[in-house]
Image (cartoon, rainbow, N blue to C red; front, side):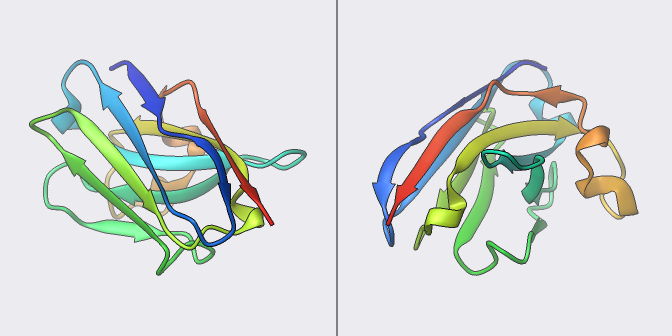
Length: 125
């Protein structure tokens, strides 16, 4: 599957953004995740959504502010980001995995096999 992320930009603290990631191939076969990499830091898990039943999970740092969703009809996964903070500044990547949803490694980037090119989100204070 090929992934194309979009929707990043420059916003102010407290603003909202919605990222999109459009996929080719058998999108519904994959659990989808969003990761981010801030300057000088390692890439980290942000959120994921189950391939079919709508289940989601989030990193503690974004819980209550970010919402991940998907449309298998549109082959697209979304990340709605509200109440953005300067520490959310990062390049955001969408990724796809077939690792079992309940597995401990299911939020580990090493187990996501396909990646989009990343979209930059900058939050100014």
